[in-house]
Structure formats: C-alpha cells, structure tokens
Length: 191
Image (cartoon, rainbow, N blue to C red; front, side, top):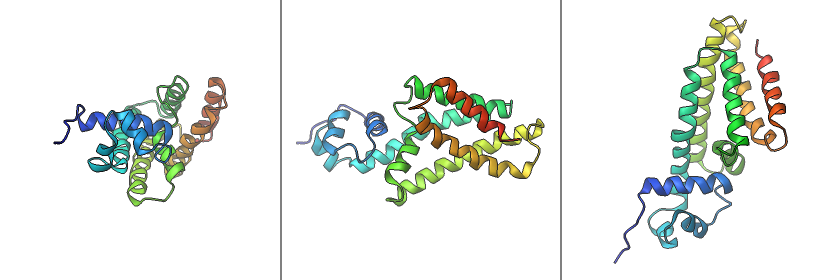
C-alpha cells in the first residue's frame, strides 16, 4: 500500500528550490533532497526524480522571483535611474539574504554549463526575458533623451546582462557602497 504524501507537489517544488538555490543540483544528493522536502528517498527515486524537481524549481524561481522583479522594472518610467534602482534592489536582496545566494539561474549556468539541453533552453529563455526587459527600459531612456543612439539599445542590454553575473561574485567581497558605486559606473557607460 502506497503512503499518502502530506505535501502537494507545488510545496515540494518550493522546498526543493530552496535547497537547490543554496547547494546547486550537483551539491545535493537525492537522500538530502528527500530529507529537506520531507518525503522518503523512495519517493524521490520512484515518483519525483531529482531532475524533475530541479527543472520545476527553475520554473518556480522564474515565476516567483524573477518575473515579478522584471515586471516592476518594465513598468518603471525613469529610464537609467530605473536601472540603477533595479540593480540596487538586487544588491539589497543579496546582502540581506532575501536571496540565499546569487541568482539561481546564474548559479545553474555556472554549475551545469552546457550539460543538459532542457536547462540550456530554460536559461536562454530566462536571459531573453531579462534582456528584453532591459530593452524596454533603455527605450524609455532613449525617449527621455538619456541615450543618444537608439541603435545601441541591443548592445547596452547585452552589457547589462553582464552586471547580473558580476553581482553574483562581487556581493561576496564588496560593501553595499562599493557595489552601488560599481552600478553607477556601469550605468554611466550607457549614454
């Protein structure tokens, strides 16, 4: 007779996302994952695979952390100042541990690189949404006269993508003030 689970699958994904965010996919065993989410190891092996929970954790992260953040960014109206505020809020989230580690998607890219086509598709989609969000704000900056060359918006969006990767490392070794100065200097390149 099979045991009734006390958690919905969504709750399992949410708990799995927490541990994957901290330890990565490779840094956690199926046994540790089962213990963290509160199910038996056989449930991980027979009903929900570690891989399945990881993939759904990436979707959970995007839906619950990234998408709302980016929606707010796209709705801003201050152009380059909006970008500064966006990056400042990321700094705050990293330093006050709202995010247990840097961006889960960045962590996944660093850990998994090109090992799995499904993961590659997930982070390519993620970065497309991110760069498209940057382009929306950069277009507003152009309309405000903050950017001189509209043709540079795509290049600037790619440039801003690199800031996410940089913050994933720099927040561990720099003060809040140093990180904000770094953001200011990066945004000043966009003119």
